[in-house]
Length: 172
Image (tube, rainbow, N blue to C red):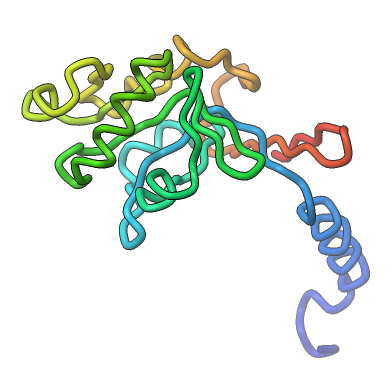
């Protein structure tokens, strides 16, 4: 209300929120990278370096992978999203059906990057193993060309691309 310190700027703030609401309605964020997660756990440790290097990703719940995704020709498709790289933090958190789906994805040309140790190699031997999360951006770059790079590096800036009505918008 009028007694708030930002009240003199309310018109600008409301206009910004209006533009962002329009942009985010019916748009699709564009990424080829999914981070596999459980419905009650979103891994943050392995994705921190992705944020710091402006690598867009979506969390993909294990249940959705098994029930609503189509896996074919090296892609995982769900709704309007298509992934070619899946990042997995600790395979032992996922069930056999999920591992089988990831194995089929690899067999058809998809890339799975696992951020764990030697015990996970036995579970999914054809995956790429990157135990150090700081090395994940380079591992992802080998499979998906980076769309955004900041020079000099700026780890505190986040970036996202969304497509709406055939037009790409970049948010920083």
